[in-house]
Length: 120
Image 1 (cartoon, helix red, strand yellow):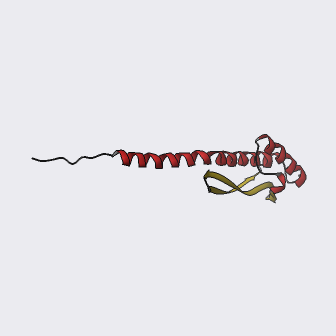
Image 2 (tube, helix red, strand yellow):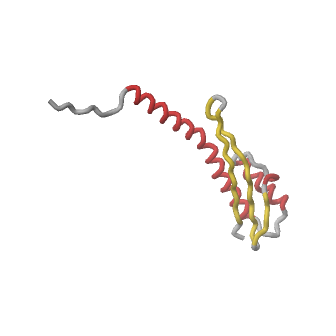
Image 3 (cartoon, one colour):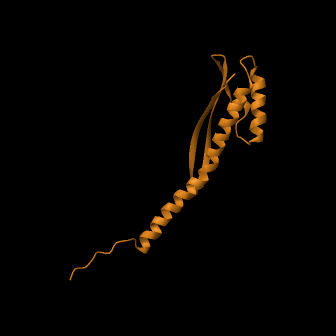
């Protein structure tokens, strides 16, 4: 008599795998707002950089950025911007950190660097 070896996942194995998948999905869902905030920041930087020419003064650029950042509820202020003028275009850059609480005393720290160069 030839016996076939059973294959598959036991109940304990399934529960263990489900816990791992649930934790990974939970962590990923917690990180989504940080990434959407980053992409909104890039969009606001690009719109602000496109608005001005190299003749613009830094306070006007910062004020315009602050207005747009307030609308999108961004954690960055105009004073955090690095403003430069490269090859006749305005360049804006900002570096910031975002901490995402996961569970208990565990959190993730994201270091974001966003920049944009104007088209004018």
